[in-house]
Image 1 (cartoon, rainbow, N blue to C red):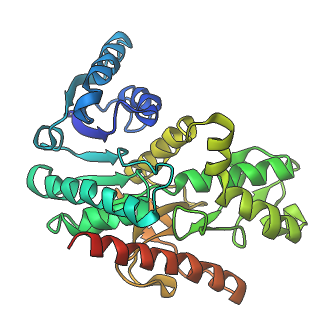
Image 2: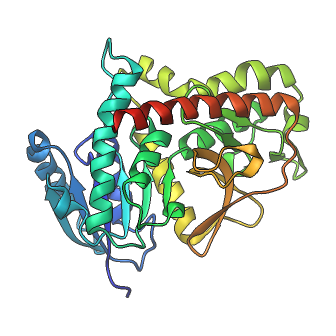
Length: 332
């Protein structure tokens, strides 16, 4: 059996952490022969609840789980970690301006970037979940300069999964019959869920382009895209809480595909540091279609981008540029 890997989850006493930890600890993500040591970080007032989470993990009697480290100290949490899942962030409160939210989160992710730089393995892979995820990821990477930028990512797999789910419901197939969906841009309501290169295998066995399978361009442009863009807000309105179960599932999907690779006939969406592909400014953390192999990702190249798509891709890039500028201003 392999040596244990150390996996950090921040904000671990929160509802996403509670939905996530069992899957990480029982082998669903890194494999059934990969022992794991969980590092759980949260703020000091949450340590009591975090202790309760540790009790429950012990009570699950999971053979792969070798230890659980609960702490409110970054130097303990980030020490020698292999994977960092950065869930904890300042939530937006009523009356809070966007720039105030950015400033609060810059402080958190600047500190965590410094902690990655000082204490984590240089091979650590980082997934930023806390919102605004793209910009938090960018700040985190900036303050961990000795860790390769390609080791940083942010979660847009939840949007990707939402898009697949909507197509499957519309066409009457299962989600594994929907492939090559793309989320471009920011994990926000400006994101562009793109079906122009997607494929759907119908229940007859025939595989068609998604547009041909759906046969309703008006639905794609005026229902599908806004549903995916605003799904998080719809869940908050319905539950009075943000997405947790689906967010945890998306985190697992993202990490598993990064670890083991994507299938040859599909790709996934990840927020990664742009290399200039598709005209997106180099260095911006932007969601692209990617394939994973040997625990590295690569952006899918050569996809045709028409004027309509380019306009939507540019709008979400402009939002990210503004967020980045505001965030960097807040670090001064």
